[in-house]
Length: 193
Length: 193
Image 1 (tube, rainbow over the protein chains, first blue to last red):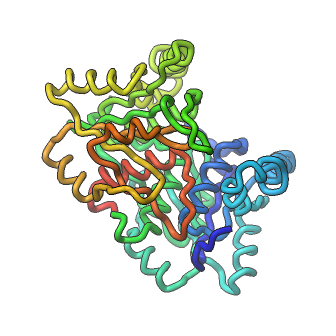
Image 2: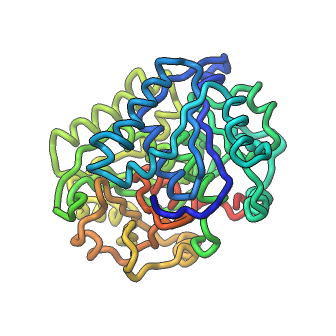
């Protein structure tokens, strides 16, 4: 694996608890493309671990099979770049497990930054987060599948990142796009802008 | 559809001619998720039309069926946001058709900006492209599926955008992530940074 620096940034993709279109609490299914696309973005931007959060044992098993195919099986031998990316994935049953795993790794609890497409909440500016990254503060970026993170997860975040705005009011990016854009905003070298 | 301003930006996703891992010229298959994710990103950033370029008649038919499901069929009635996004899609047989379609629309040939993950080429800075956008210059952003746009397509571009760099040397983003990041770099309001 190529050296990706020493950033203390983790990403978690939450499948439960999230909300559906009508705001009900649900669990969503893991998708193959969420694993691949987000792992590739994570690898590009020097993310330490990409946590896939689901309490469902069968879904965790699915994650394990997909990751094994690309890290130990045929996939990885044909496409080593994909191996580098998918080796960042670790499945986890719940947010507490993720926080504990990161705290063990760095010896300090990470600052939890949630993402939310809905406007109207108090948010932290990307520039402030970039300063934390420069200061080597361990950070956990939380992303929700389906229609987004459940209120109980947002309530546990230390800060919430601003919704991604483009032109106009449309704010229905895929979570794969949202992760890519947030990582780029927080982690791309200044010269790239 | 929500007002997305009056940008003269088009995006084209090329399925032929592109290259495979070993640099051979190939045609790639259309994927459902490329349609959805890129349409949603395009809609977020005020893109005028998202062109899906493939010379294969069956593949074009597939694009038409998926788009119809979400714009005229059951999908659109259940999820109007997806309808807004997928209504930006137009399939096209080749780059010339795209260029002609855009030229008809604006009365002027668009500046063609290709994207390429491989370093080593002379590229235009994002800040220069942002100035063109402010000046209302029609632009066509070209993205390649598989392992990227064929040399003959790159040779037809007026400019090439810099490869997306994160931390380290890994440069194997999905095309869905690449489109999202490029649109954000070129089109997100300055205040978002």
